Length: 110
Image 1 (cartoon, rainbow, N blue to C red):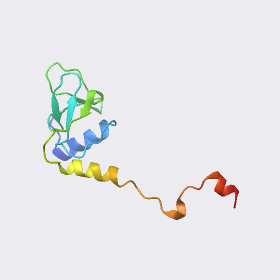
Image 2 (cartoon, rainbow, N blue to C red; image 1 turned 135 degrees about the vertical axis):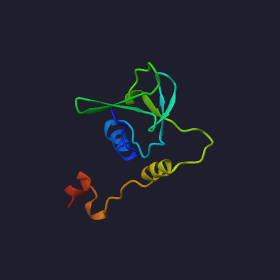
Image 3 (tube, rainbow, N blue to C red; image 1 turned 180 degrees about the vertical axis):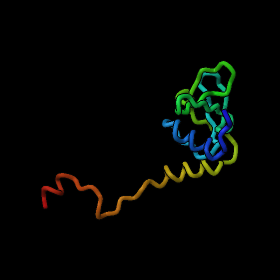
Image 4 (cartoon, rainbow, N blue to C red; image 1 turned 45 degrees about the vertical axis):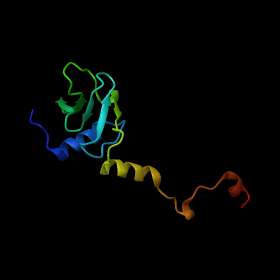
């Protein structure tokens, strides 16, 4: 099978891995089975019967994305993807006052 382009590879990772977000191919994961740190460039992508699946690139490692954890090397500079992730957590979507939920008590008193 032909290796997918970088853009397509990222879209496949984002679609198939429904447990963790992929912001870039440089995002790292730690495989819980073989203890290897891998990134989106290294992950093996297979396509069988029109469906993509993700696999650890380590020889004889049977893991897939459900066995991988987010990995961050201590003491290194934050990447753009990490900054985006932090901003998303720090600034949750704001609910306009007119559409905010009303408690039952305040509604019943109207």
